[in-house]
Length: 256
Image (cartoon, rainbow, N blue to C red):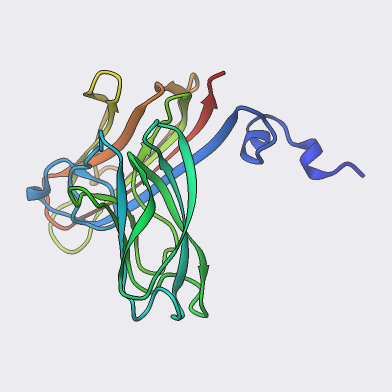
């Protein structure tokens, strides 16, 4: 009998990690309440970080959590696996064991976090309360794990210096939380280039939720980004109490 992994072809072989020099990354998030005053707001589950702060100097990270429900000796999250961009703009992974006082500083430093996941937990089997990871220098939010979710939910990707991202698909959704008219929401995909130190608006979509509240885009030619890009998605609404969500899937090709 032929093993499943021997039969994988195309995108499946990349998703399974069978192809050298390329890996898959999927980013998703929701934001449960965007108001008109939030402006062009980053889609991140903390509902407060409107504009991402892109670090140009590496910093350690401060992890803030509820020490009575998460951390050493609790039933919640016990340790995190953090995927981040180091000072040389290379992809790194690090394990951090949570302490007990509700605020830890990591032993590693970096320029941004792509993903943090709950690596181990107590009997609750997830992080009971939210976990915020900020740059120790300056205090800007770099990652957020919503309560009970176990993984960061933020539409932001840091491309390493030796990696070219190729976007495969994009999903956008919006709806009104309570009362009022159907909102119009403007979604933007932005790229900040660490090469030029400049931000670019590379995609814009205006969603009229009286017509549709979701859209899926699969570009037949795919959408290439560049090494050292920081890619993120925002939403801007003209109606308070708007909820949005998004998902971005891409392959990351390592340059040799």
